[in-house]
Length: 202
Image 1 (cartoon, rainbow, N blue to C red):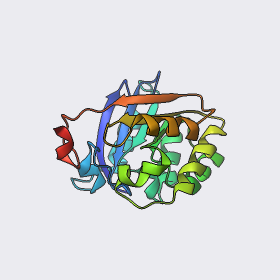
Image 2 (cartoon, rainbow, N blue to C red; image 1 turned 45 degrees about the vertical axis):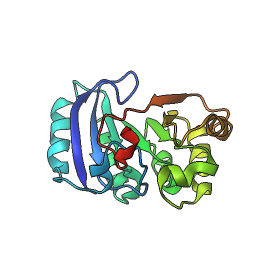
Image 3 (cartoon, rainbow, N blue to C red; image 1 turned 90 degrees about the vertical axis):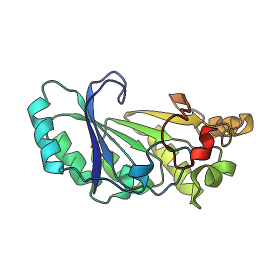
């Protein structure tokens, strides 16, 4: 697994907790509105996992946990090993995911390795391929939603409101898709950052 970014202290990445945030490289989506294109393409200098774990060990009395985001963390088969190392420090773990790997979610949850999951819902199912610039198995998205909803840990679903990809009808579709969930956030699209499709800045 490539780690391409690390924030030592974050007050916004895990609700109600002070955490460090790990950014993994690589993603199986190419969302035009993604503001981390360098992570998606797995570009940049790789950070030392051992040094990050050493930092977490030293700071574990000052922090509540770790947020693992990307990119898309669940494309990495060695994700459980990293999470186990973090949990061994008695730290909470929040995972950010796009929901394309329900088997990984089941593995992590059955092993009691996660404390919180945030899943991005890109658009309605009818518009998912357009919003992600990818042909994907929508059944896996639906399966991940149900796995998360039925888990015994806290979670959230969230959608970035990009007008080109999330219409009123799409939003209704998303609400039907996650019906019965405990928490759904709408995120404001910020076009100021570097994007995969910079034409969206206009």
